[in-house]
Length: 85
Image (cartoon, rainbow, N blue to C red; front, side, top):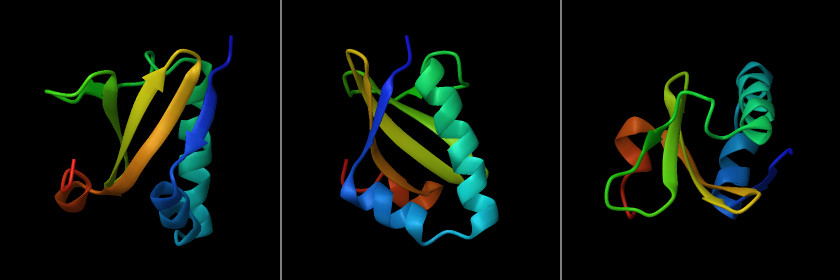
């Protein structure tokens, strides 16, 4: 059963600013994530319920799983992604 992927406004803006090469990396990652968000090398965010992170190159993707939906909350570099959580 494939998962639906929904992007926050911040995540969408961030992806739109990337180069085509980087966008392609994210496309591949999100395709794998939609097939099974638990099979990709993910880590749980401590202190948060059903919130995980994955690494794509130098970027971190924070996402939340609710039923059959993966909500991509934030994408940024390691230094910036955990601020304001």
